[in-house]
Image (cartoon, rainbow, N blue to C red; front, top):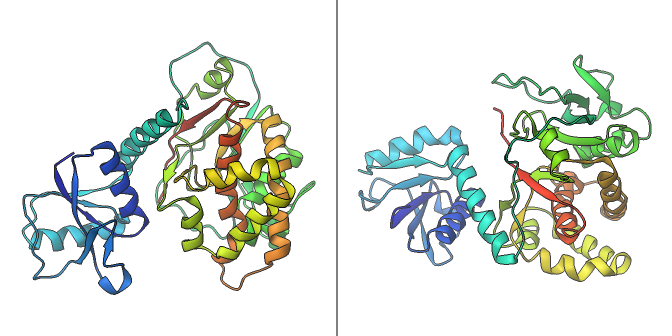
Amino acid sequence: MEKHIYIVGAHSRGRTFKEYVTFLYPDTVVEAFLVDELSENEPEIDGIPVKAIRENLKLNPAYPVYMATRGIYHKKISEELRALGMQSVYPVDVALDSRLRNEYVRKVFEAKGVVFRKMEEKIPQQSVHARIYVASSVLDAPLQEVYVLRPEERIIQVGAALTEERLRDAAAFDDTGDNISLKNKQYCELTALYWIWKNAQQEIVGLVHYRRHFLLPDDWLDRMIYHEIDVILPVPLYVAPNLEDNYRQRHDPADWDFVMEYMRENNPADYEAARRFFRESLYSPCNMFIMRKHVLDQLCQWLFPILEAAEQHQGMKEDKYCNRYPGFLAERLITFYFDYHRDQYKVVYADKNFLQ
């Protein structure tokens, strides 16, 4: 990494990229965060100035610029920066983000004395029944790129109880058997998680999304069995300033306050560990996983009472995004659960894609 750099983006992506770079390359100096509008941003972040991209903006053209924003904005930003004389403008694409994220997580785990395991080395074939459920909805926007389902992947229609329309390629529907399909507007993909818990019969089960899938070797199942792996989670994501405050900034703080109070009263053995964990900054996003079914049963027996209590207390929210708080809470709670039980389960991590 270069000695001096600029970062485009001062929200979560920009801050995450800054954390990865400065942690992995301590000699690197972030000269400034560059943004479109100063009015929508803080004047500085961690002592680093935030500057608007304008015609009169003075930058050192020899310093590279990394665009840590959504890809749809990269062309426009690149043109603006090159008009200012910047010589090296790079997108923080999936490949760069994945490389830095993995290096960062590995070092953070090492500092905690925890092994960061990923899917490695080929092994003999095994014979175990596995199913990865792909959460899809009739409301999903069509994909712009082709994705062929893995042999183990099958679509599960979520929110099926809220519509008469059925996905023609679905192999399962979350409104059959014991289910909470009617709660999909709040629980999102967690209605599929609940259905898998109550109805799936496979020895190994997983949950992904129609836009997000694990990047796995073809023999991932053989490796999982041979190495006695219990759980596969997405490579953790860094958020600032920590998991608790990040939730408070992006969602309703009252949701968080209730969950922590519920844990204090009902899960006192977990509460203090949870408080410490949520002051850290890494979590596995998207409620994605692959795990042994008996492990999923144990997770869900712990998780859903917390979410159901929060739902009953916090109720429905008018804002559609905020109303999905059970799903947002679950991302952090699931990550905590497997960190707290790290001595009980063997957890490995896998990268994921994001389909346009």
